[in-house]
Length: 458
Ligand SMILES: Cc1ncc(COP(=O)(O)O)c(C=O)c1O
Picture 1 (spheres, helix red, strand yellow):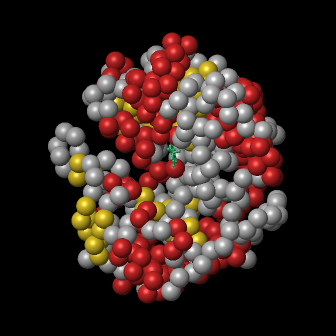
Picture 2: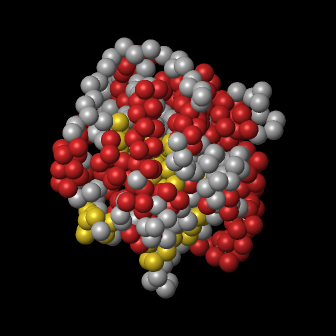
């Protein structure tokens, strides 16, 4: 029997959830244009749409919120956050932002000109969207094992150094304003990046004089994987590992809605004082003054506490263990997933489960819709709806390597019984997989279409 780790907390406050009837679910989906983002949350029983901002805060965080200093400038809350930032990340400068994509927008708007390219292991959709919105080109240079759903490579988020070197040579340093890496690699299955790879990527970027940034929203989960899997790190704390990770970079941005353990927040941190000054100017125009960046004082205080809680190794063992439990249970009932289990989510392999649905008919969307109709479980397609795009040179449609449905687990929210219900629902669905049909898009905006697209079953 798969092992379920005991939660290192008990529940002090509850929020009711309700399973609506099959007819109500069918109705809700029609109303939503078969887009799960358009559902009302009250019509969802188990909500695994995202782990972003959906976690439960601790009693210490709620207590910290009461100390929130709402002064416009120089609030105590800002300085408490700055102290935590310095102790964990060690960058010389940072600004708070209201979430991750605001930090991405600041960085990209200042550094990216049309035609420029930004390499990463894999960009997440908001990063990709922000780069494209400025006329830039996001480029994914992850190792080949990342697109093999059954490879058990321990660090499938690693960047391919040969691909990176030849990409820089071909593109020219002058066309690469900065390089980055995402830890863990959300778009590629929540897979971690090793410290050896981070060190090599940093050295390679720096050998060409290219600034290196880390998209670090799940850095604590990544640090835990390094501790568990990489030779030489078993006796280092997750904090020591985090220090080593960030010492390699010129800057980082974070959606703090993940390993910041808060419902809203983020930051952009840099070493370069000139860049920091330009970021501050832009921040004031778009987000708010430099000591609050679009957040309330109480949000800053909750984040200052949450960043420490995410590094707690008892919590991380439970968190990563909970995801592994879900993965093991799904394998037992014959549901294929991206292996090994990631840090924050299970990625069901819709491509393998529904081989009869071509990528142009969105197998991931078909599975995500069926999962809701079957049991009111909400996941998200991470496949052709999210990532297929016309090639900027040839105009031909480029499809992603994998068609996945991500079941992201909110932090400190669901119990073993909730996860068992998800397994049962997927097991029933897998038995009738050959009956599922694809979808057609009836509306899509030009960028980040998965949020607002509408569909029709074929
Ligand atoms: C890797 C990664 N980067 C950036 C973001 C964007 O963060 P936010 O949703 O806070 O704007 C996300 C959000 O899911 C993410 O997973």
